[in-house]
Length: 187
Length: 187
DNA sequence: GAAACCATTTAACAAATGATAAAAACGACA
DNA sequence: TGTCGTTTTTATCATTTGTTAAATGGTTTC
Image (cartoon, rainbow over all chains, first blue to last red; front, side, top):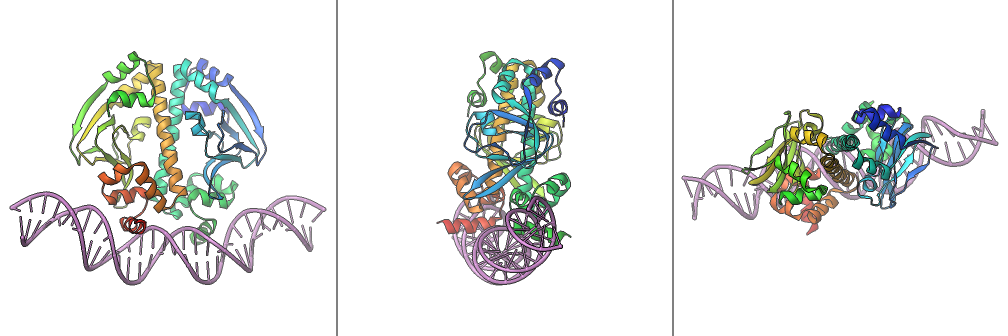
């Protein structure tokens, strides 16, 4: 997805404000398997996915738990670093060769203080992410594993085609074996 | 908690910007049991809790599921209404007699467009809520029911003392009977 | 204090999910 | 094509959680 559309989908900006953001964005490419963010590190960049797919995971004891997927148009951000300038708890791994738009967090924060439109764009960005997060929270609390799987299938069919099932099981909060059983029962 | 502290905890403002917000806030009182927000309604206000405690719940089939508690200093907001001007899916019930600070959403949105400091205050507000939401999401996905109960006990001891266990069980994503078993095993 | 009404705990059984291991399916590649 | 390595499915048993119902404990009201 192109950067203009990504920016506009969040909050429409005048030409001049939009240029200010776009001036501080560079396009970068990384191969499949690249670890974009490392846990326990303060991340200084913020990305949008132009092309490709990624996941965020953290460790519980020894096993990885995937808790986020991103695809074309989605932001990749370590909220702890972005908001509080603190170490994050997640790794972000690219699951395909990716084209990304990179923005330095520090630069963005300067723009927030200088340009009221960009401040409101940043406000809207977090508001929209918050709504996504709330919806997922409620799905986890309200729905059974089977329902959550069906919802993923309906809302993000490409994730299931492009990502291995062990990550999806983890994302759904169940084991891979359990997901396999669920898939067998649906057919 | 006093309004000055609540505002400052989110993002420090200059005197003039702070007055702008405070001018549009009124203090209101409601009794225990009052339904502050109704599901399937566009809410036009936004609150902070000065004194008291509240919960948000939604219906899944016939049974209520509690998915949020708020106490002194916390905001009460229907994100769907606040962000998208759409109907919310939750009721908010006051669990004690409450003193609240009320802010009209529309007024706040006007201020966002007029005052860059307030826009950044609003940005920070959603960022902080987003971090809370992410932490809860990860707790739901990573931790067992017993661990989640112990975490609630440690982080929000007053909730457990002030709220009936059926609501807490629902919040933890388990049945009341299951919570009772967990409590019995801990002792 | 007794009665009525809740909230909480306990008990018994059913259903869902986890853990472990083995089998099957799939892909990469010489 | 055949082999190797990885992913996914299937099978078995253990554990957790859900469901339903009854028992216990507390509070309010008359």
